[in-house]
Image (tube, rainbow, N blue to C red):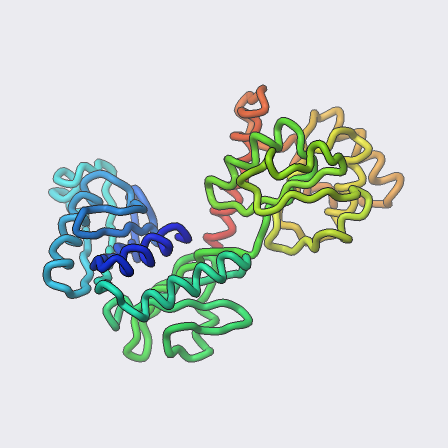
Length: 338
């Protein structure tokens, strides 16, 4: 979404009219769920996707009409038996799509895009709001700053969650979606697996911080996509970061002793995910050390995922990185649907 806002800013300033296409609801075996978006100009789709295939193709056609008519609107792809055949979606389903017309040089939208970039840059929790009852007029919500760009009662906060919500009440129809999280992925250890993992996670929207106690590994040039690279003392990680309930941790230091030290500190944090690289034998040895030296009870270790990653018979650092990323994507999706 951050890149889409950048595209919106550039194209509006260049005098282009745009249509922001948003899936506001879906059911059945549809390609993309609520929150899928694409941006369309007179040249066609600029960026984003609502799933490809016939639904996206027809949505591009509708967006072209919206550009000509200069009027926002909604389309319901209710997939009856005939629709399923026509749209090529064999398993069926339904998709509600909103087409928001944005005129060239629209001052309000430019303000929202620039403000969103500022909040993305500062790593803030951020929601995008679309007032469907007002042509899809955009606004933002950020804790600490409140509602931005739309006049909305504070009580609306209770409708904001990780899961996209469409709320119809008091003559307002507002679609709200979290588009950025303050949560980060803290990668402890900057070896070969970490060097493969960080770019994969960054590409799918995780904000990564790579950390090591070796200067030759804690180097930005090894992690160009990381939000930050830090040289730290593994025995005192709280001197460098504060781990929150939104944060993920991947432990892959160069030895068992360092892994144990880091795990002990993470177990005293509210991190939503603690993944540790290594074999089952290594895990048993580390857990025994944690119980003996730190007094942890057995049930505490249920918070740790070890061996880290999905069981896909991964062997190389690149394959292991894919297995870890898949596991974290799955966890993020579960959390977003709560």
